[in-house]
Amino acid sequence: MITEEKIKEATVGLLQRASTTLPSDILAALKEAYEKEDSPPAKMQLKAILDNVDIAGKNTKPICQDTGVPLFYVKIGKVYYGDIGKAINEGVMEATKKVPLRPNAVHPLSRKNPGNNVGRNMPYINYKVTGEPWLEIIAFPKGAGSENMSALAMLVPSQGVKGVKEFVLNTVVKAGSNPCPPTVIGVGVGGSADIAMKLAKEALLRPITQRHEEPEIAKLETELKDALNMLGIGPMGLGGRATVLGVNVEYAYCHTASLPVAVNVQCWAARKSSCRIHPDGKIEYL
Image (cartoon, rainbow, N blue to C red; front, side, top):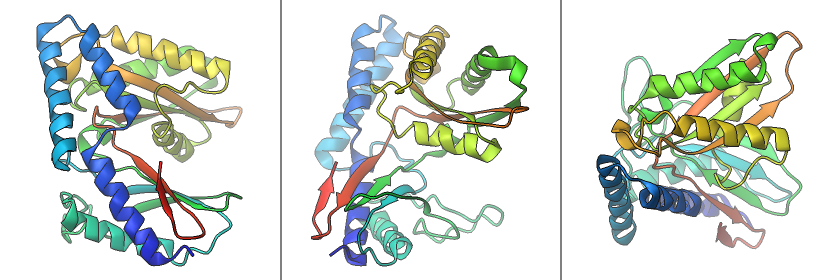
């Protein structure tokens, strides 16, 4: 049975994994960037990143002092699961002490910090209903250095694909070294203002090695990655080949008179972890 205690246990495990290790696609991209880099300062920065990841993994410690705010994507299947939100909140509080996670979540105006990463609408949980016989949870802790570089533009349809590309490039140029490049860029196109922003973040959940299923969007992803890496911003803004590790694009149909475009930037510490909780209570980390 999928109980609240199992969801809490899984939440702690997910946050620990997400904070102390990198997804295999990100780690492989960083190693490839290091091998291809010919700028000494950039190569030195990439080596420092890789050494840091190795040390964090061996000692089960966070790979960055900014362990982000706790964001989750939950896919609800045909199973009993109890109060998911309550269980995840309790898991976040326990993980904050156990991992430990930096208590980043504060009241937006008073800046009051409860010290446990839990408050109104935080952790923020995105729900999706599926027909699968399990409960799937994705932990996606997001740091402020990269999140602060997010941007939204309400383009007019006549600007088309060219306008989309220009906006993405200008956003990355403006971000410069602030999001700790090399970064991963999530782009959301279409829908409405809020939908585009949501799609941009969801795009970051997809492995950077997995191109979009539609050829036209896959081509846009490749073209954007190539263009962004020609900017020369490089690791930590010191110049070099690797400004971005990948670009993922998601889209939604939109109003005939509108063309929303959103960019969500992810730093090299592209943390995420997922699991499935099966009807028998087994937790399978993916």
